[in-house]
Image (cartoon, rainbow, N blue to C red):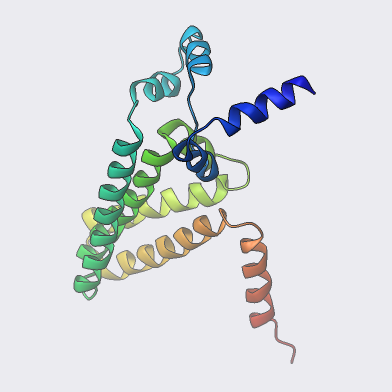
Length: 186
């Protein structure tokens, strides 16, 4: 019970910025946890990479905003070259990569990868990344407009399915709607 009251006092003592960080899922660092984390010497690549990615809250928000706006810009500019599937595929895929990278600024690269590899969305992530690779391969090496257009369609569907994995019960609801739409009895 004493630990619970200490934890509550600790949360109450956080400033509004720290409270907002906790709400959006960002880690809140204090002196005690920083000392414990610095004492732990883990030699994994992601831990080392995450330790070297120390940005202030302002820098994280700026990085997110810049990367997200660049991703949206690439995605919207891809619409201008829609009738050239090769240019469209490159711009659309680059926009998707920048949009995914933008969230790594907010939550950190280690947590981003961990969330993408979560058992709930591992297949959606694999399909999404594979569809981006296929779209770029068709656009850059094959130079076939029909294959590139099919790969972009697959990429858009994979993006939608991947995005729905972050909304509770969204994929099951969409699945039920699609099954009911295509369920025909003759």
